[in-house]
Image 1 (cartoon, rainbow, N blue to C red):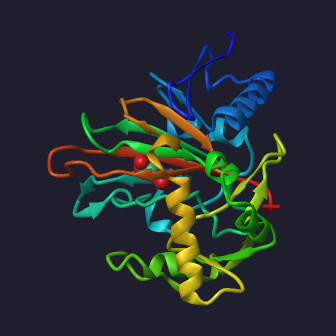
Image 2: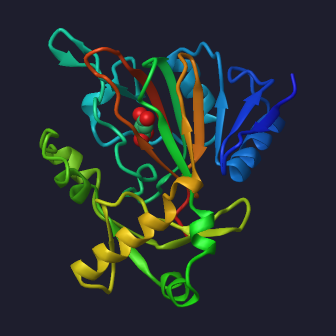
Length: 279
Ligand code: SIN
């Protein structure tokens, strides 16, 4: 089989085909990483992947990062994080509210996620799109003075702050707090494959630029999010069951969207592959 990559009619994203995630050789892996560095998001339709197969494919890209919220780990494969509105025996089988609001994954880790993999097992017929944007158009269009300033700036990324913005979420355990101390990353990072520079924004509720007052920091973050997530920079993935969608968090942001939770079940298995320290 030969990998083919067909770009979407959108600023990012492409359909991949001609590849079996259960049998990826070194050349395929290299081609997939390069395609991700160019297109940002790849979609493989009609996959049938057990959790072990999803994990094995993800591991080819690097080390798996466990999610902070261990209550949503898949019991038989804890590296797989479950996103779902399904409740069994009175207990949610996954996080029902994961990923709302634009963000890159696990930016609050010392080695934030490079690649995320979502495998859709049950997906609503309408709604629940995952929307993506590429950070490069907004970065390239920054006014020169702001760009120069951002080039020298660092931001605090804090899971504690993110969690505090979610009043519905269960309090963090001491172990979960210990696993997620604040970390510091540059506000502009370099992509390790292409060398291209882009804003690194994490999630709006977990990032605090250093050297600014709280109000100034919030205003800057709001301005940068507005620039980054304009509709003309986005692609919305409309899920079909058995889609495997994966992306490069080093220049792609994403957000979950709502759906009719009373009408539809949604079950997504997610894995996250650790990247490098942003530079
Ligand atoms: C995520 O942010 O990883 C989840 C996105 C989604 O469920 O659509």
